[in-house]
Length: 379
Length: 59
Image (cartoon, rainbow over all chains, first blue to last red; front, side, top):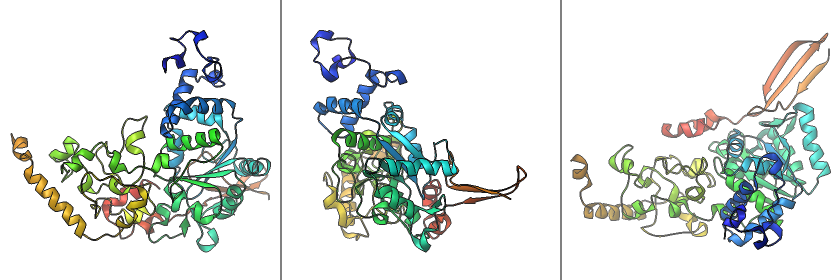
């Protein structure tokens, strides 16, 4: 019974002690009501794909947690991941996340500059050794001694080794920190790599995406604070709650794929009707991310919902393997088939046209068996 | 003449270093340097032009 969470329906005596006790939360003085806080916890439980019996556990953990330190490092980045995180408003993600944590270093939002800024970072590394979290945004250049990114006179590689090496856990946000991102796309002028490659052997989780969704970043932190460990991941270190399902399998336009109804040209009748974007180069069939479910801009929409194909931004090397972005993916297996990340690998890259031609034939047959759409349009 | 270096400059997007030569309480000379390079133009070379906006908006 969810109504009692708001404290208006069930009389106080009927509720159990503990988390259901309706005292104001520690966020009340900061303008976050108990209702907002519990909505936040419920959203996190849902995003983490946990049964709702975990809701009280998460609420309790977040109430008790003693503001662990977090430092946010930016290397070869565009600050887009930072924007994605800070501009999220559902449900008070910014308010709550920034209050759960003590953000000791973040170049884009911190007040001190120069030596004072570097002191904040180094104090955290020394005083909170083994206890703080690091978020890394941006790739790390390793070519020519790492001269292509320096902060306070130190190379990105040097900083990453020290800061990530002493942390409780490292969370990489975005494609760049995951594998190098577009700076590492052909011909990779600066020798850009991801954190996993630059600093091997650390406790790390990858949240790729260009940018990643703030809900997933926050949910990962909440999981860590509640259970004391990072969420389960796939072979590439991506949490399964966010990257366990293929975009194609959760896509709202999937029925049109299965029915052979495709957009053939931008702005055609099918495009206006919201048909499948596969033939326009959508990379949803080769991409694992929860975009169709959690969506963007307060859950308003997402790229495919807005009428543009997925570009595959949560996959390794997508700037090279998924381009040209408007070219159809080869070898997408038939209709109505679901798949998992461990079975999909081999056919994504550089496939032959054979299996794909078969798909084209089936799609053509289906097109013939459909009632003539064009004549309807012409009327 | 004392020289001041501020690196990193915060509250901006990107990486910036400012060095100033101070003479009698006034800035006599100043140098700015962007301390990060990725090579967007080199990466874009030879690609499908329809893909360019996706790269370029991530500058």
